[in-house]
Amino acid sequence: MSNYFKHTPAVFAVDKYYQIMMPCEKSCFFFVKVGDKIYYDESNGIMCSRNKIHKVEVPADELDKAKEYTVCIRPIIIRKAYFSKTKNILEKTYKFTPVPENNIRAYHIADAHNKIEEPIKAAEAFGNIDFLILNGDVIEDSSNPKNFMNIFVICSRLTNGEKPVIFSRGNHDLRGNFAENFAEYTPTHLGNTYYSFRLGNIWGILLDCGEDKNDDHEEYGHTVACHVFRERQTSFLKKIIENKENEANGIKHKLVISHNAFVHSYQPPFDIEQDIFSEWSKLLRENVKPEVMICGHAHELNVYYPENTEWNTNGSISPVVIGSTVEKDDENYFAGCGYIFNQDEIKLIFTDSNGKIIKEETV
Image (cartoon, rainbow, N blue to C red; front, side):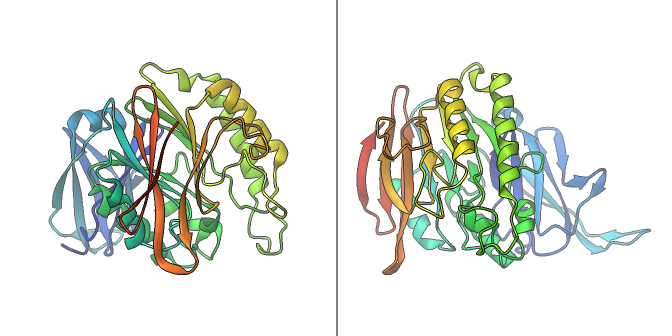
């Protein structure tokens, strides 16, 4: 049974759904019960058994209401064209806690680069959370699918399958032989690594900048096509605005989450896509008006305010919090950022793997 429940599931918030994902080391069928409804990991009516990571999509309001879900696994003896043989169903029920209305606590981890214990210790220094934000480069690269398990270990240890997770892709995630399979191991919406989400009274939009240099840079060896990928996100962002999704009833907090802080133009060769990123910034600033932009990538712990025009070179959106760092001279060190969302403010608490509070700030 440990081969099927080695890690708890991860409950990712995507659009109006939760995607319940769970790694299984042996071949099995996977489905989830929420109340009196069953949701299957299936492809056009065919139960999936070859996936290393099983994924089931559940309407968020149903799981929020039920406050629990049951993972069901049917081990396979042999799968064949006729008379496949399976074992009895294994079940395990997990409690689920929806995000509360006030004093909402979240922790942000980015740029862990395969570290596991260090970001977990930093998050534990912040204390109890209502949801977790994994914002890119949690793994070092996608050369080995074993790296993807690090994502689920962190989710398992910090949420126990009982609290939601927001997941964003980073530029290192695009590198390696299995980068093209990354979406199979992580949450997506209609196959896309960019989407909106809703957690209680928090609404957010997640944008994926892709790689951090131009597509033709020699480092990539013709393996990326991120320019057209970013153009599709411009259309996506305009559609979100047109549908006034960010103006839905009950929204009190609006977030932008991106691994790379695209409002800032870095030094060459990282000074890419100025037109696209400036358009994103303008669309968000004028139409969405988020409270905060949550980023990683730069390996620092800082808050950049809109009036800092020297830093907001592509046009300001809101305060930009870059909340993750490591130390080159200490491979056992990590620092991240805790968020407390209250009615009229957001409190930031930066903590590290030594259990220390580095600094606090309110935006």
